[in-house]
Length: 513
Image (cartoon, rainbow, N blue to C red; front, side, top):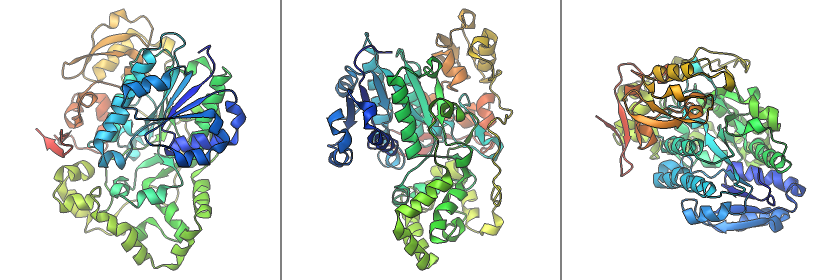
């Protein structure tokens, strides 16, 4: 850790997680006595300066873009700890895909390069990644953990850019880093954000979701800062990947999340949605086997989903008016209008965007079949009683080796077996000396060679494919040779599918040869 005066730099402080972090700092301003907090913003943060006036003397604001290497050099200078919460997420990443590339990918590369250039007292990096890297999950594999295969959903530019950004951190020469894969966040702008775009229709009714509130996420970051400042963080925390999740009390399915929201106006999911509104695959989310790991170190969990919805109702008294308005009116003016939005499946069908329908439903025909169904024809998972499985529940998943082994127990045979399960090869496994951060040479199932640390491959779930350098998703083809990808991919895709999903240079989505 650094010996210099303790200062921190923060990116993404205007986002939901960032606001949660600043809220927690604002409650305990003594935590940052005598230190400087450098915050990067794209625009002058006048509202935030006013909101956090308790911290104003401790803040220094830099207006700029993380896509600028010069800006990144400036924010890491004389810094002890960098919190990178900056990200362009859906629906903005769908609306402005180049912005997602600039922030989630180029910006991370710049930040990594700037930190690497600091040779003496190099700052530590806390990098926020995402659950979206794991791709779509079904009930067959609703539980997951760090180390699971990374199969981001086709056409999701957000997850593709975050995949590449995370990999840069893992493969960097930064001495002290940690990657936190953030799950879906419950925040108090959810209604406003979700009623402005067709993104809500991407959520599958049977998607397993483990949420966390923006407040608890902020407390996590605040506690990391506090423990880092006092040099109380366990050494084993760093150079690892973790899942951020709220635990058993925040596990739901997609439809139930909507149900809880509509209960505020005495409604339900079925009152406002039809079976063909929502995608049946190609989303992301899962319940974690390992999200307790961060809780044990930083004790940040306070709020369940039930708590959140009660707060949502008490903070927004106007929603009580919804109880007096006919549900058909609400459906017409809030939900149905979004079917015309560019980001909804109904719009894709109307404008003949077959590639997106295939990704989201399996085929155009399967989408059209849903139009003829009523809710009584649709199976909901555990509708009356959602079972909360124990977090220690194990499942049979193809990892290629015993994932429960300790780091010291990993052998070269494990590396060989993992590579073989991927349909590839660990070219120089013989030089493995027990150091998980040593870069080895690997071959994927296409015979392409790539260099990667042992940790990235066997502990973090990374395995090189076309998505690591282009917006091309080839999991239909790769899963035929890759047992690890196949275990997840074939839960929601047919073995007879042979689609190559491409976002071209003009950001058009299509299926290629």
